Length: 458
Image 1 (cartoon, rainbow, N blue to C red):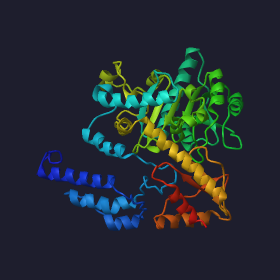
Image 2: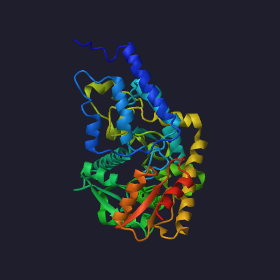
Image 3: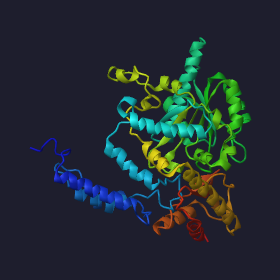
Image 4: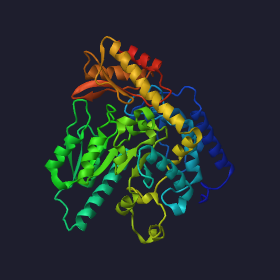
């Protein structure tokens, strides 16, 4: 009979497993040239890596070899300097290497009682971010999996606050609750609304894609007191556009409506002093998010969700059960009380380690590099025959077109670019028109790399 403790015992076998895994992690972390790689088909993966789960196991050496030589190369490397689609990830070496420590330490990040040390360190980062964004000193929050969960959690807290306020005034809930956001808002807002079974009313942005307070006010007049939250965007995913948050905040504060700022991608740019005026009004947010796995150089998956008043979020999210009494009856700071989660990994610790290692000034410089590079390559696009900008970049997203190409031509070009392992640039669209888009995050993405990609469009 197999020993029940075999997987956990300190034996020569487990020592060899740890050594092999750490050796691969070290080699991958120290690659001089990160491979871009590309996906394989289901049929190809079945041929190369089928039947790995058996009664007796295939052994660590073989499993690790399959991952390194088959499974990993079938995944795109989001930290490759030519990965310019969606919003890439470019975690620092400090952050990714320390991510191993988080797993190896076997710490739980859901409560102060069980994980005081990691919760304290995460809170150091959250309080620093809150101060950078102009929020009060008692603001705080939690690291969740990503922007979708962050937005959903914030909106749940917003609705709970509105519901409690109405009931305190003796008012019933509206027939349908409503969220107001821009037509350019991220798809996660509509997703959150679907989960919460509430409606979304969109306000029209200006011709440049920016939402203003007057457009929000008009929708609020139409929807009445059914609105429990307004969502402003600090850097749209497709274009990197920052809403006129200050004018939106004027409207929400005068009407007593929760203001949530979705800064999953773009809010990190507020760390650059010259960019702060573009984000005026963020300091009035009731809640906000920014994703460190995007422009704060942390590994997947991490979203910083910050509340102006964490106490309200605690009322909305704390789970109650007899076995949790020892946690919920105390006054400790429990991250699991601030979002839709209970069990949680201490996902903010890799960012804490990288920030503590390199300092905030390094982060400001690295973010500024991406903004400057976007402006440089936008000028180059404007100067080239056959290429034109769709909009001038505000952050580090550059959207442009190849004149005369249809969607099929863009797709064929994108596929060849990946096949040639030059870059990963998938087509996007705007107002029904197919376009191309550079999302610049990594400081290893160079002007020369972008020129190399543009040259293939000739």
